Image (tube, rainbow, N blue to C red; front, side, top):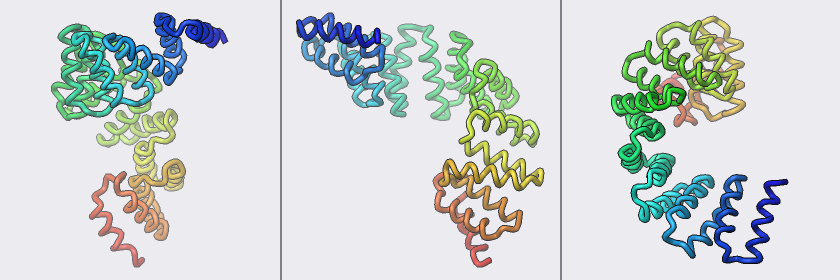
Length: 309
């Protein structure tokens, strides 16, 4: 109520004097504080018509447009701000981040690098560069940037997470395990760390430890289809087919179009002798091959082999 009364007070002042630009700027701040993005944007555009050379107005417009998920327009606003103030670190960072949000990584990189030239202790820029290099498969560059981010911010669990991932990708699984455990120490509810630990232990043949991490994963994120698939395979190895099948049927209730879930469920039915359900889910796996990790040609051959059963 107090928030709205402040906005009402500012609006009344503007009604009495529409050229009171300081009040209009205060109103923008209030709108932003309380999540009224569209209203803030209207006021910013009004101010920009009168003060087109004010970089702060362009910058704030970019922030609002990002809040509204209008990243292409946010990029234009940040670029306008930089045209006026080319070495402002906040403007550079936000433009880089907007490009990151649109997955235009090559355009994002120079802006984060420029921020670090101006402010060498910017942990977020190091992290974002590490994230981008990780996505691009540039493992050594990713590791270097993520370590730099952690030197500046040792509590950044996401930096530990991606550093763990990169350690796994480069074959250092013991370090990866330690780093994922550090993620869980800092953020105990981060389900992806549990899942990635489970995947490592499963690949190493330690199904019991993998099972424990998968159960934690699904407690935190019951819709994690990948965790359900691996856990179902472990349960099947334990001859617990009933629970394995139930787990994947529940997974399909949330997302019936997952190719891997259907494929795994098909083979569970095959092992229990239910050929009709095997063929049904095998066909569903083919129909959803975009979410299938098995080669589609291999699956088609398998289906043709069993369709007359």
